Image (cartoon, rainbow, N blue to C red; front, side, top):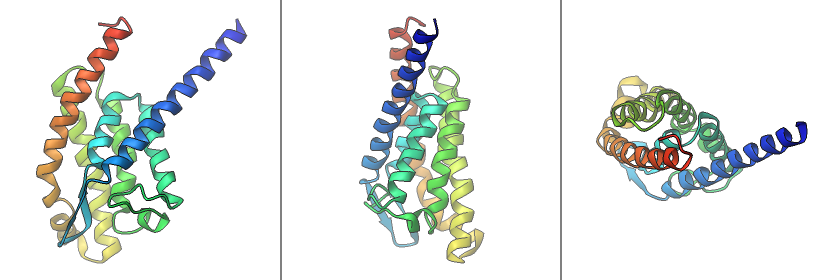
Length: 190
């Protein structure tokens, strides 16, 4: 009865927190892959790949928790942001819009992916959440914070990243669909 439901609820919350922690760590680790650009205060990093994977594989709740965990750990000063940086100033500096975009992007991917097994749908979800949403928050933020304006911000904060982000969409889609197929089989849904 009620005791059983309480245990199921607690187990579900623990499960969510474990996945959130694992993916927060993945986002941080992929931030170690960081390439500074001379034309932009925003480095190329592997973090958008981790955001796409979180949205592709986890539930919406787990994906949001993973990115929130990552942002909170970074906000308190742990060097988890791209280039092993951390602190509240990074969250509100030139890169801040992209970091906040990670949260919304992971949620959007999770909402759009469906079962996460259909490649075309997962690719579309990753492109919309992992590129469009992140850029829509990051680029204007970059333009405002730096004073460079929107046109220069698109050149410095989007154009150099598009080729790599398209590769990340492909990688996240293939990996995400494969993991989701295995998870579906393991739970007897496929």
